[in-house]
Length: 64
Image 1 (tube, one colour):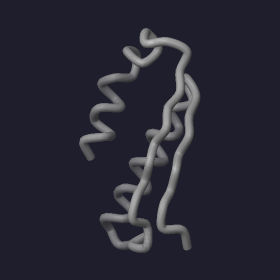
Image 2 (image 1 turned 90 degrees about the vertical axis):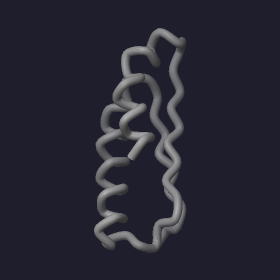
Image 3 (image 1 turned 180 degrees about the vertical axis):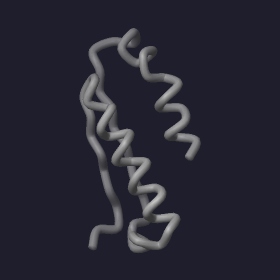
């Protein structure tokens, strides 16, 4: 019933959020959640080095 989804992750918690983001994206494309207009993924981490571990994965998700 929600039209806007915000996913919030901290540090390594990005891993399940990426999976959920992908699920939602594909479900929207398949018409299961056509009422959702936006998905926002907010990721907080301690330092830039932590982000480098996931940069390729997050880049692929954002390109979807």
